[in-house]
Amino acid sequence: MVTIIERIEEMTDTVQSVVRGLNILEIVAEHNEISLKEISTLSGLNKATAHRLLSTLIATGYIEQVNKNGIYRPTYKLFSLGNKKIDHVDSYKIAHKFISDLSNTIKSTVHLVVEDGMEVVYVDKIDPTNSNSGFILKSQVGKRAPMYCTSVGKVLLSKYPDEKIKEIWEATDIKPLTPKTFINFEAFLEEINVIRSQGYALDLEENEIGVVCVGCEFYNHKGLVEGAISSSIPIMYFESKSDYYIQHVKECAANISKALGYLPE
Image (cartoon, rainbow, N blue to C red):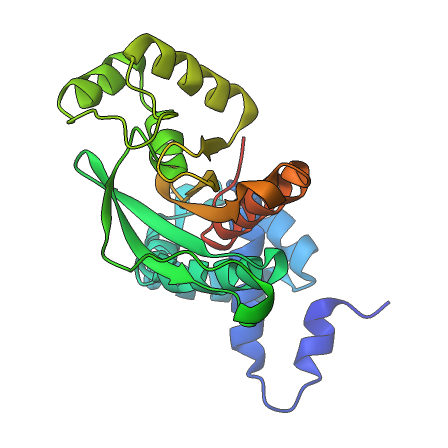
């Protein structure tokens, strides 16, 4: 049976020593602490060749020798390199593709927001490509909105402890934008608990009569909330297909999180 390494080495444009060195690096990283004998066996290399490559990896800072008994383990250099790559990832550019697909699938406007102070800021907006067959909400990138009356704001607030939510509530100018806007904190906190249990938030005409918004947060590679997305749907459409819209928004948020390197527990 031909191994992956043997198959790679058959390629004419590869450098054999580089391929073998990377293979050893992966073996050590996978096992965390491993002996020269085990490395030799797993890599298919004799001990002399494996030791020579290990010495190079030690010299370049990727592997360290734990003791004189020949136990090797990876250093944090690999972790550092991985973080450099992640730090250069523009999460909003990644999210853009997913919310574009979502908008065209459900045929409605989709927003991407981030939290800023005690408000949310709309940093991206996608309207369905075929505007004749979809619902387009009149909004704009850069718009700010309070958290208590938007689905994205509520889902972001739900990640905070109750004390923090109360602090934000008391510092916000709470006013009824529609007859359905939450203006009582106890009732609002009950809504937050519902959001926590179901994993998404709804704005049921709390910001604009006739419009329902479904909101869900997404996470970065550190497990921290990076932002939230929402879809805006006329209430007449939402009432007949609520599960459809909710499921698509949740899946989109989960896909963004996955693309950003988030690993759910």
